[in-house]
View (tube, rainbow, N blue to C red):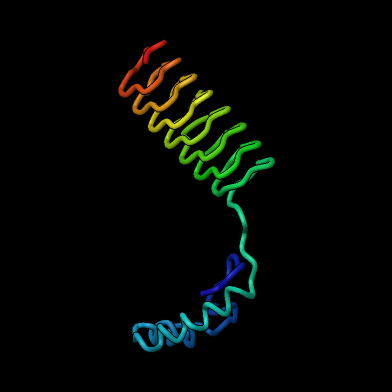
Length: 150
């Protein structure tokens, strides 16, 4: 139960203990009454220590969490290489100009309301499971290597 510490041993609430004392305290946590006492203290403790607002790196103008190499993307999570995207969740490759997508990516462009689509896909709306090299699809499902369908 620590905050903002790295490579430290035998700490509880950011206070260092000797190994024997630490082990006694950890063993006492097997009792429910002791554990609930620590959780009450934890709520007050975590307010005093700032947390990272985002996990990720090499991002510019993004809002979300667990983002890597992304730019101008809002409300995106667990994704990488997003450009101008919004409401994107779990990309598995690069995506540009996409909105409201889940598990799409790797060369995806101009997607709207799609799920589980990827690998060089462009201009898909309301589609799902269109995995391989599809383009210009509306309301399609399981259409691989397909173009211009409704």
